[in-house]
Image (cartoon, rainbow, N blue to C red; front, side, top):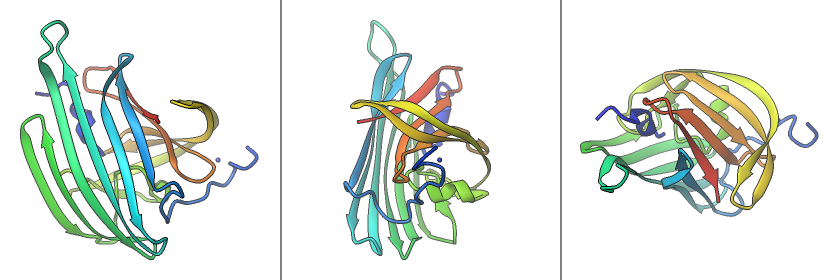
Length: 199
């Protein structure tokens, strides 16, 4: 089903003028988001970090279900579980299993000098190619800086730096003053806006 297919390409003012690049895990060890469409919570995205600043792993779990009103049957479902391994600021490997509305994908890749399009690491803003975490393909992207803005979170407004990624991946992303992912927005195939709201 093509509805919301873009859900699957899961994938800097004072103190913010130059963001801290996220070459190490967030200090809190995790980032969690609600996935919102048309004002409704349709799923969750979580990043769990373990290890040291020099060598660590990141588990990324996405679970999304868009239901048909009244009958509550899934119109679209997307599940992904991936593990990225990092050493000295570089991704050394990634393993990912994805169920994209019934279409199964699995990848097991070495780093290949690429960064994954999982969005948590703002080093992606300096790259022109990213690794698709669903099928392992290489995506060409461009990035523009849109300045500092307030974005909503579950705990209130947060100052964050806004960037727009375009090309093979289209996302608006915001990173906080620590370089941690703060907010995500993009258009689904049906024209609706999907946002990741940080918990």
